[in-house]
Length: 296
Image (cartoon, helix red, strand yellow):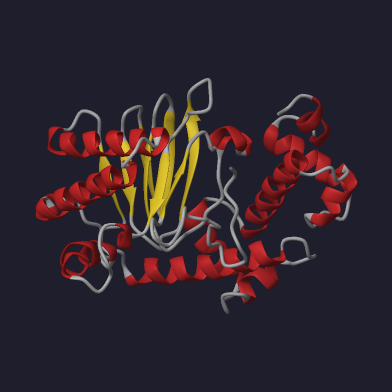
């Protein structure tokens, strides 16, 4: 399923149930235009693995390149996105998104002693488990076993998944002092909050004729400061980020609905169908009509 976010940039995820709060995804990149997802966040942890290609995972302001066999742990509530930067075919990229309460109740000793310190650590936005690094060999095995259990769903798979995740957090806790930390500056933290506010405004109002000034006003900052924040976080202008999100939304609507190209153009905030078509082709290399006719 494609990455879908609400007006606050929170990814819309439906777990199997509150009693087993975990979601497993695979082959999402094949459904994303240009194999690239939007910046988003969720209140849960995330673990992803590159299978065949090279992935560029953005977590906060950091970009992490994952080669085949590498895995990544993303802490909760952080802005992140992913795009595939190498590989002929879409990387299957298995991903799990889960709550720490799957391992233990939030009010219990295990959660408070071993889960909360990781979840609440601002200096640990992510951890990379490289294929060639010995220290995380056991973690890589746990991640592989967890993905297999979630995919095959054999009897008692829930207990096996809980055991795998418990082992992963135990390993993180035992290697705590050796884990690379990154302390964000006050300016970086303010920039992140501002970008979140501006992107949230974009995602809620992309269908409307919003302006650069409207985007900056969403974070109560000047247009020059808004431009600085976007270049720092997304390496583009606010207006370009808005157009890119409108096009991503349009691409999904072309796949998932029977709306005409003109209807989708208007629904995504483009006043001119011709301008929409030019921007679409500029970004994706093919026309809106080819999405349906050729299965792009």
